[in-house]
Image (cartoon, rainbow, N blue to C red; front, top):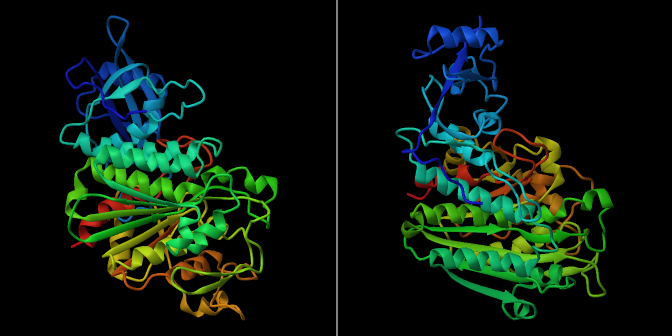
Length: 467
């Protein structure tokens, strides 16, 4: 699908955004008494998401009212629903609509972005019509920027939603090649036994049992400036390996390449915005399937990583950190200004924060503050967790440098992040995002299915970070 706004020169109907002052709707200037009386008679009180269609004198539509609830106060907590206006996209009848007013506390750019997000449909296997209500980009809003962000989100959703039968390592590589071709980037892919020759042994070990060869996808965009390297986990399906998952835990494992999907989506946005010229952008995606076969890696195996650190495999279902470790070690050798890993890594992160609020880890307080603030300002919620150093001993087994799956189950997201950090050190700053990459049930602007997380927080934080 292609995100787009309505033609601004085509006829459109007004959509009035109405606040609730506590005693009912507070109709904005421009709403005549007849329309206000009609709305009251329909029970319209400007509750969040409430819609009221306004009749015209000719029996057609004259416009619509949409409730926003009370105006936010300084210091208010985030609203229960982000992208509230996306409900209008789903509910309004077919036609072009324009925002007729801009109430205090409403960010028109964010509202319009939510509308674009609501138009997404995953229609590869089934015909699905997007909402028929189209929005005219609000005045003063950079529509091209919003479309670039929506395009990145659409790409991430499409990749995650595609089942492993059509999104194995080879297909993920093709998606990366398509992105590189669209934007004039160079791509190099190391596959199969060549991974051993190139000293990427843990990517090979995890993926060697799969029907498709494991591979490392390496994309470099033309541009100069501060180095930004994005590393995305590309486990295209995760059976758990020999420590096989139960069926219920395997059901959504097509999304285990959500980290790769997110870094590709972010790169799509950066390239569309022309931002890749001022930075040295690199993407590294270890693409594998964690499968079961006679040559699958085993519990108890000791793997030697690219960095030389040895890793005891105490659970083959903790494979994501293994493939990321080699990719991070490779990325770190260039000492980028910012090194970022994104991965659907731990269930512990979901237990702690749920599916909607992914944790991120960063030792650099300035970088972390910029990312956190950008996520809050642009409705891309994230929450900082610590690299808690007293837990380092939990990832240090008796017979190897590192343990990929510490026993006990405590602090699983933190110990996974600590494990990854061991493969960095030269980068000026390192941030790790433990995302879910999935919307469990439909919400405004976020249909059920694959989801981008942390992409826009990073996008808006980069100007402050890469200075």
